[in-house]
Image (cartoon, rainbow, N blue to C red; front, side, top):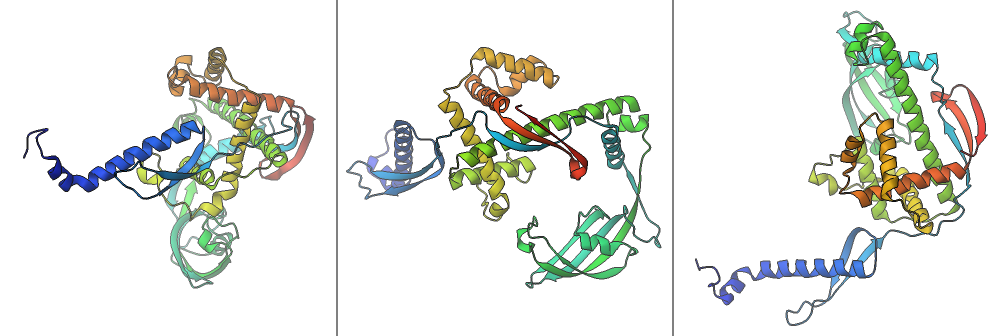
Length: 398
């Protein structure tokens, strides 16, 4: 009820003393913490742990902050390193193209309910419910739609479906693998009642111009094949590039082992969940979610990813390597050609020119990886997916 600037100080202090104290503490701690991090040139990961002494309004505020920092290991012997890499064959065969066409057919298949007396076979679409308990007494139930033979459900459950008719039930005992995605049932045995609720038949489309149009792969079968071949070629290239990078840094880290902070690993697990679509980047709760329930499943790959990144950063630092704006322009032009985009579109997607320092660092990482791979001694083994037929081995420095 007072005019601005006319409220008695004692009254304001009495009403808002707790809030004022909290605001001032937060401000002082935040500013002092940021200054200390900058003064000590620390690369902090995770959240700090604060400890306060006696807080007295008549004295200067004093506190300590315990932080985890990113490791800065000394990396040696990275140029010319030797490692093995199992890669996809670079040549796209007629068989590869036939498989791609079949995948398109499968993705545009139509379904119709099977007649009541139909016996379930491989390839039929089954709507299944199951109810039972694990051998530790934990109840387990669910409802799924599966293509029999694809082992989307447990292989023993799908095997039991063969010969059943819609509405029938069967008792099934199955053991889950030790590395099951659901940690709570890994390695355990379930005894359950399986019910085949519904059976559907799959009707595949012919490979014709109409399928090409529906799949948005051109106007004709010929155009569809051409686009599928381009996609396969790009898939092989990107997959092999990723494999070579991972194997390169796995070899470097094996020669230069170092431990990474748990905070970095947990954040990498969160990033992997974002990439999988299990978490939504737009939701605030995604960044505070407890990851303990999935930690064990993602620990090894997340740790490896963090180690690869740190090793690359350290190599760049040790080599005192950087790129200039001209190198960024060249890299952007190459990206535009490779992805069939305009230079302006690539720059916009990268946030240039505002984010030039960030993009410089990114290009430096790409260039350093290229240099490391150019000098590496790689024993390449080309293997078809799913261990298909024979393998071809070559040795190369690239």
